[in-house]
Image (cartoon, rainbow, N blue to C red):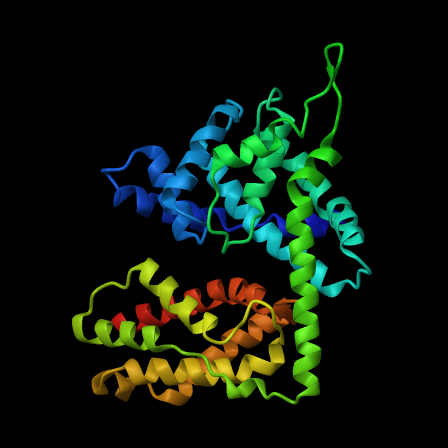
Length: 336
C-alpha cells in the first residue's frame, strides 16, 4: 500500500473528537471514566451496547504502553472504523475472482501496515490471540448485534499461539491477521459482489432510483422545535435525524453512483428544511438559497473524492459527517 494512501486511511479529526469527548465527560459526572469513554464511542456510531464497549475498553486498558491513555484506545477504535471504510472502497473497485484472493490482497495491501501501526500503542508482551480478538472487534461491521469480549477471546485463545524461540518472540503477524480478519473480509467480499449483482439487475430491469426519496421528517421536526423554542440542538438528535435521512434511501447491498442521487438529495433535504421553518424564518431563508447551499456543499465534497460508486452502507458513512457539518452551520446561522 502506498504510504500516502495508508496515511490518508488513518486520518481522523482528533481535535473535533476530543472536543466532543470533553462535552460527554462534562455531562456524565455520574459515570466512571471507562463508562464515559464507552458512551463517547457509542455516540460515534461504535456498536453494539455501551456495556459491551466498556468491557472491551476495560480489558485492553491493561495492555497499553505507559505513554498512552485509555482514551487512546477509543480514538484508535474510531480510526479503525474509518480505515475499514477505506479498505471497502478498494474491495468495491477491484475485480477478485474469489474471496481467498480478496483476503490475501486486502491483508497485504492494508492490514499488514495497520498491524505494524497499532502494535506501537500496546505492550510487547500482549498475546497474539489478544490481537486477533482486537482485530475482529475493531473491524466488525457496525450493525453487528454483539461483541462479547470473553467469547471473542476464548475463540482465539487456543487457535492463535504466541511463539518463542528461546527468549526471542517469533513474528506471526500474518497468521494473527488472517485469524481475526478472514471471516470479516469474506463477508465484505460477498456483500460487495451481491451489491454489484444487484446493480446489474437494477440496470436490466430499468428501475429508476428516483422512485425512492430521502425521508427527512426528523430533520423537519428538529427545525420546527428549534424555531419555536430556540433551544440548542443536541448532537445526538442531529446525528439520528441524518441517519434517518440517509438510511431511508440507501440500502446496504446496493451500489449507488454519486451523480445518481446528488440532485435528489439536494432537493429532498432542502424541502424538509424549508418545511420545518416557521413563517418568520421562511421570510429570511427562501427555499432556493437553501438548495443552492446544499448543492455547493455536495459539489465540493464530490470534487474531493476519487471513488463515486459505493454501496449504500459506505455512502451513509461517507455523507453523515458532511451533512452534520452543514446542518450545524445552518442552525448556527438561524440563531444569528
